[in-house]
Length: 49
Image (cartoon, rainbow, N blue to C red):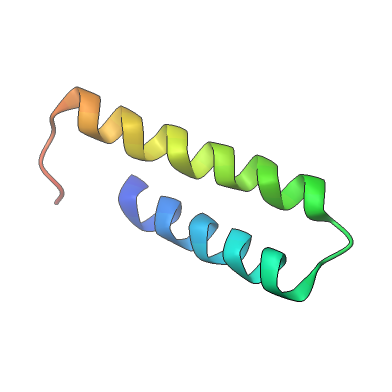
């Protein structure tokens, strides 16, 4: 579940970079959240369901 959310946030961030959205700061915050979610998943060592 977290992995899916992280991937969606990453895709939204990439779209924000490509389109030059006016909410660029918000998009970068989403990227940070996505990275943190992936790192927590890797560190916890749980299997993806």
